[in-house]
Length: 102
Image 1 (cartoon, rainbow, N blue to C red):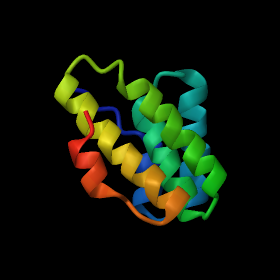
Image 2: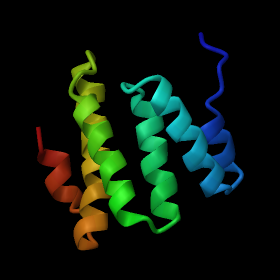
Image 3: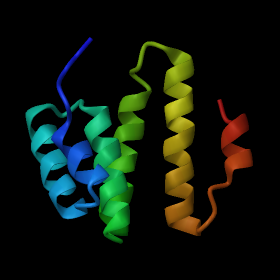
Image 4: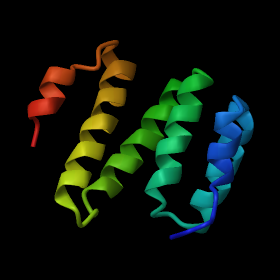
């Protein structure tokens, strides 16, 4: 079990979204496949109302989700990311569409 705590999530949890963006960006620079940091970056950018940057981060996380070996986990994460993207693009999670998407 890893004891590393992602500093982006620490800042996000404190409501310091600008610091969260900095921390997530730094982690992504170190590891371009860090899906957790892309997801966190998307959420932090969303909180800061940086829609285009949030969409970009969620889209990158979704691209990485397909590589997750556990296909149920991959599908669940992809549906969650698509929900965020739908909401940001059209103002509706379209959760019914996402629940049935494979």
